[in-house]
Image (cartoon, rainbow, N blue to C red; front, top):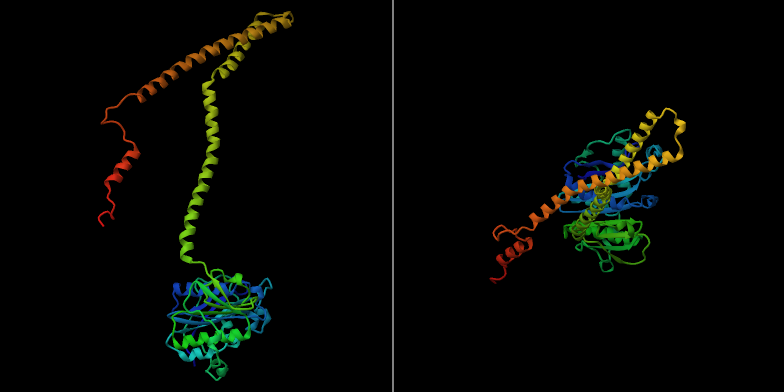
Length: 387
């Protein structure tokens, strides 16, 4: 019997996608490593009908054989292959084999065979009725049973024309693409197994039957077969190092620009209010005039109403005269009071300007920032001058 563990990534009846099963010794880094590959294989999941995607991934510690497929490809009970919204479920199901420990287990995967992965759906069924996402997945020991290695397609495995296939084992910035056909799938799968058994390279990765090239964005795979192409192609990856260095700087500057714009917008109303207040302070005679006019006119009419008992004596001409007298008095007083108020402010401004124009001794003169920085630059030595 073969020694291996399991990886299951999918969803159950009510709970969304997550890792349902992982090997017992998988660390967070190991989980991130395999998750990068799974995310690529689950893209365009609506095209999985009659088109399962097989994959092989190997690093210095583990070799993973997996498949992304519909739940009904592995399980016959239809009610247990759909979620509560009646959507067909799919997931990643894979076996994990420790490198350099169990060569016999690798021989079970000489060709992509979906029947090997059917027992892994039991991990989905174990969590089928859960209503909350578990804090940690099921930890699987290395005792999964794969069955004994037989002579299945051994002859086809050995029948490979290596000159016909270019296989990527070293260029991490490129993905070698081939049309998704039974011939190319067989050749690439067999070459991947051969590289693993010979242990000639540290990293190996292959994915079969991706839907289109747009699914390859940020893909870590080195070799892929894709639907929609007719011949061999090389897909160039974007350098992750360059994008990581470049993007945060842009984000930083853009955030600063945004905050500056927000500050400018928020400060505009306050500036306008300040201008209005300054204009009011500069022209207090307007308020004084209005207040004094109300006071004088009110006093005049109150005196007349108290002294004259017969109000019918008042004519329109008398009212007009009272209005203009109160208007004139209020204008004169407002102008006079405004001039008195402006005198001390002018005196304070003149005193400030006089203090600014005072000459300082050379020792107390403030140094210019530019001169300070220039002096520092002249003092500092160029480290390459000595050479």
